[in-house]
Image 1 (cartoon, rainbow, N blue to C red):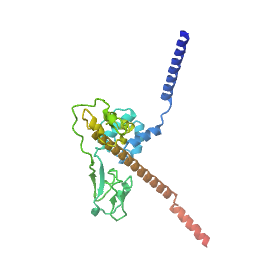
Image 2 (image 1 turned 120 degrees about the vertical axis):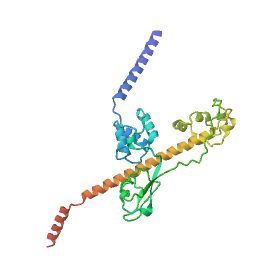
Image 3 (image 1 turned 180 degrees about the horizontal axis):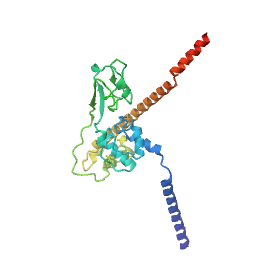
Image 4 (image 1 turned 30 degrees about the vertical axis):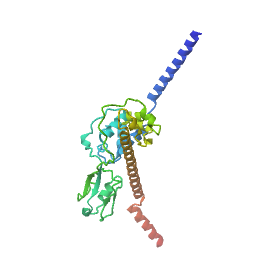
Length: 299
C-alpha cells in the first residue's frame, strides 16, 4: 500500500516536472510578438515627436529599441523614461546620451505674433498640427496641443519663436518632516477607516502606484480618522493625498502623450493621402494629349 502511494506520488511529480520543462521549452522557442513589444515601448515614450533621438518620431524609435537600439536617446523623457524602459526590457539603465540633447522639463513654444511674417514654415514643421495661421497672416500656437518638440524653431526666418518652461503647479502643501517613529502595524487605522481600506498597507506602498491601485487608494475620502488613532502619529492622510496627486499627474501625462500620438498619426495619414492624390493627377503630357483629343473631337 505504502509502495503504491509512493509510486503514485513519484508519477505525479514526474508529470509536473515534464509539463514544466515543456512550458519552458515552448516559451523559449516560440517567437515573441514584436508588434506588442513595440506598442509597449511606444506607450512609455513621451510622444513629443521631436526626432532628437535620431529617428523621425516616437514610434520609429520604439521599433529601433525593440531591434536593439539604445534606450537612452530620448531627452524629453529623461531619466524616468530610461528607467521604465530598462525595467520593461530587462536592460541596464544608462545616463541620457548627451549627443541627443538635454532634458529641459516641460516646455512650450510661443510665437511673438507682432514679429511673425506669416511664412507658414513653422506650420509645415509642426508634427502635431499645433500651429494655426495662413500665408502672410499672423500665426499662433495652440498651447494645449504643443509638445515642445522644438521643430518649429529652425525653419523660422525671423526667429520669432521662443521656448517657455512650464512650471509645475501643485496645490498640495509639502509633506511634514518625517517622524522619529514608523508604522508598527497595529491595525488601529484599519479599524477606524469608514471605507474598509487598509491604511497601513497604503502607507507602506505609498511610492508604488501599481500596488496603490490594487489597494483602492482612490476610495480614500481623506477623513483623517486614521491619523487620529495612529499611535506613531504618522500623517497618513497627507501621504495619501500626495500619492493620489502623483497618480493623477501620471495619468494626465499618459493621456496627453496618447493624444499627441493621435494628432501625429492623423497628420502623417493626411500627408500620405495628399501625396497619393497628387500622384494620381494627370501629368502635363497626359493633359496635353487630353486637350488634343477634345479639340480633335470638336472639329
